Amino acid sequence: MRTAYCFDLDGTLTRQELLPLIAATVGLEDEISLLTQATIDGVLPFDKSFKLRVRLLKDANIEWIHQTLEHSVDFDAEILSFIASRPEDCYVITGNLDIWVKPVLDRLGIRNFASRAKLDDNGKLVGIDHILHKGDVVAELRRQYDRIIAVGDGMNDVPMFEAADWRIAYGGTHPPTALLVKLSDFVIYDRTALCRLLNML
Figure 1 (cartoon, rainbow, N blue to C red):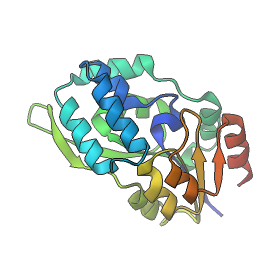
Figure 2: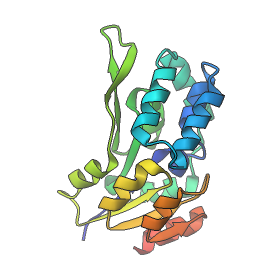
Figure 3: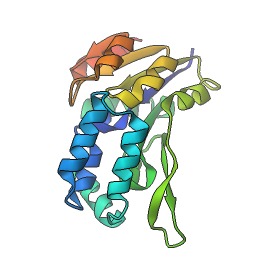
Figure 4: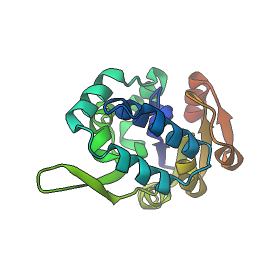
C-alpha cells in the first residue's frame, strides 16, 4: 500500500508563520499578523484573508522577502528527518504564494503545491492567479497513492483533512484550530510523537 504524506508549511514544517515575516519587510507586521490569526482561528475565510494579505503586500520587494525567509525561517529538524527518509512520498501543500515562499520550498527539496502569483510583463506581483485548495491536491494524489496522511494546523487545512484517510492536527508552533481538531484522527503537540505516529501509520 503506497502512502502519501501531505504537510502544511507555515507553523507545521516551519517554526513560524511566514506571512508575518514577509510583512516585516514593508512594516506591516501588525496588520498581517491580525489577518493571519483571524484565519488560523477560523474567524475569516482563508480565500478572503489571503486576498487581503496579498493586496497589502503586493508592493513588497521580492528579493527582500527571499532574503528575509532565507535567514529567518527555521524548520523542525525531526520532521525534516522523517521527510528525508521517504522524500518521494512527502509533499508540501501550502496556500501561500509560490513567488514568496520559493526559497523555503527549495530548501525542503520535495514536491510542493502552492497558490500561484499573477505577474506583469516585468515580473512584478499584481495579484493572485490561482488560490490553492488543498482538497484538490489530495484528489490529484489519489491517482498515485492508496492512502493519504495529512498534517496541518489551520483553517485552510480543513479541505485537505476532509479528503485524507488519516488526519493529524499538529500544534508544534501554535494550537491547531478547533474545527481541524474536530476533523482529526490524532491531535499532537510534540514533534517526536508526531514522527513516531507517522512511522506507525
